[in-house]
Length: 254
Ligand SMILES: C[S@@+](CC[C@H](N)C(=O)[O-])C[C@H]1O[C@@H](n2cnc3c(N)ncnc32)[C@H](O)[C@@H]1O
Image 1 (tube, rainbow, N blue to C red):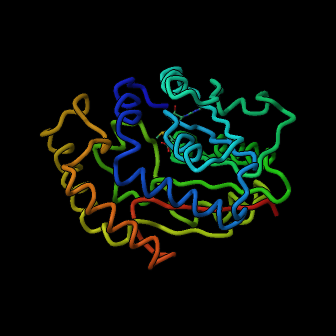
Image 2 (cartoon, rainbow, N blue to C red):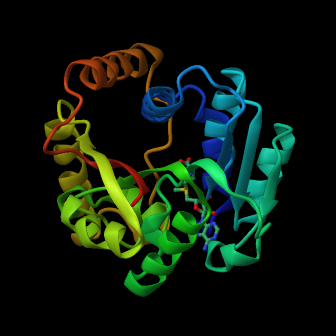
Image 3 (cartoon, protein in one colour):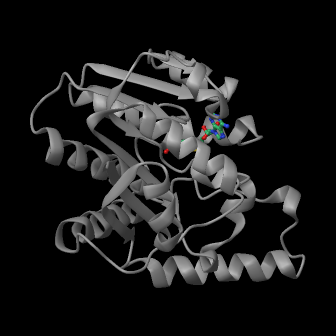
């Protein structure tokens, strides 16, 4: 769990504008559309929804049955400020949350990094159990340890993933991977250089662990729009890429 209210506050303020969140939300929406067409009545759960940026985005696209859960009182309070139906739930106790409800789509973005192996398997099993037979689990996760940097420390992220981590995990949880891609491939040299520089500064004591900052800040408007244009073009032109700081996975029940 993220320990600092300040990180939720930044997320709440910036996730509608920042290039990274915008393209992630669009990737989720495009995936939902790909499987469910123009239907807006499907049941969607955002598990570990943070401050509700994705739910807010989907609400603007006229999705009607949106639900969110998160284990942070700060995150839930920010969601309530947006008028979103979000409930405080520890994902380790998902089974106790409205046990009879099943969802067409469950999104669980950038949450798995807070779970150790056994707990992660239990979490993915619990999420799979909540899907309707033709349901969809969408999960974005941070990828490749070479991208570890200040951001990971700031948000308390314990681990990064590669696709092979999920090749066994998903079937063990009763799911089959339908799509997996790393992103952003095009920006990866730039992100890698920044993260490696941060790691070096952390190792050499130039940045103190208590002063670390996440990547959740708005660069200048021009740079933000340029980065958005690049990742947006990549998502259209290169639907699958072999490298990047995030891994986007779509799975369905076996
Ligand atoms: C990096 S944020 C991602 C938030 C959101 N999914 C997004 O994409 O912006 C991780 C979220 O997972 C939540 N979280 C972490 N561990 C959790 C747990 N055991 N139960 C419920 N929520 C948890 C945190 O409170 C935080 O809101």
